[in-house]
Image 1 (cartoon, rainbow, N blue to C red):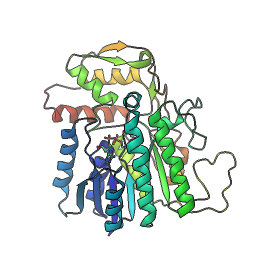
Image 2: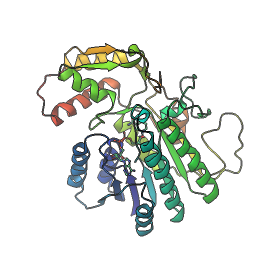
Image 3: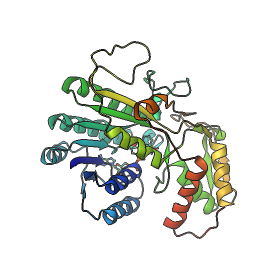
Image 4: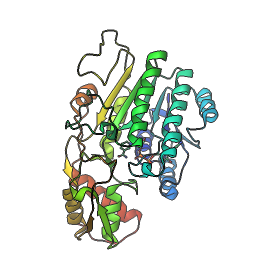
Length: 345
Ligand SMILES: NC(=O)c1ccc[n+]([C@@H]2O[C@H](COP(=O)([O-])OP(=O)(O)OC[C@H]3O[C@@H](n4cnc5c(N)ncnc54)[C@H](O)[C@@H]3O)[C@@H](O)[C@H]2O)c1
């Protein structure tokens, strides 16, 4: 049975991925997380409890480890000789970075370096790592094509993730380490992050509190339901990039290399304006939001929309979940999780 490690397993995406992989019973699954307090640690622990509960075959092992601890990461890799690593551990958030850049350096750059170094030492078969739509930065060409350069980030979170992509290429080239970087586009769904828009909007509306909407509500996002994200990651796991001697840096192939290396966009491919997103939440909750329209926040992307043609071809990936269905699922989970009584449509 293949051994697979998920870093950041107590996080939103890590939890959903682990849940699905435990159910498939195809892997001996290891999960690590430092359980940091960027948001509710009890939410992270609740996610881990569910993973323990569904793991009837005892195929899932959790350890509290920080990826920025080089020694611990090396010991873990050498002891367990993983076949595949899905690296999701990172300091996320496009606004937190303004006041806390150190955390992004420590977790995302140093931490990722440790993952690369240990991966190549054990001759890992495939490293899959999380990147972000934020790398597109000031790029004006929409939808974001994965085969265009993405070298003008607007904040340090995006810079840390773009750095990961470049660091990974050097390891892939030098050590023939197969690496795939996945640029996620605004994941949402049950067990979602309390720092993200959907959670904040739903919580505020239910508690009759006002909330800020930046750029006067004119932002648009490509919201991707977490089950579609998980499906994309699982398809990626078995799609190990190969060396390609014929590759040349001609136009339109920035997402691949002569090294075993690939970058993918993982989005829904549909653009939703924030104003409409809020209207949809109001409709489901049957309740009006108290919105404070405020100006543009430095570092934010105005719009995001994934060009997923390359991903569709490469992985045979088709996102399935419509925004109306996904948002309703989140709200049902939220009401149940917070034990709030509220009728929805
Ligand atoms: N959710 C999204 O919309 C989205 C979009 C683009 C990219 N991403 C990226 O996807 C990955 C997963 O995102 P998420 O939404 O699940 O975030 P999350 O914050 O819920 O999950 C990350 C997990 O990693 C853990 N972690 C952080 N630093 C760590 C470290 N040094 N060592 C060990 N564990 C550590 C955290 O405790 C957390 O449980 C991240 O890399 C994030 O940057 C997410």
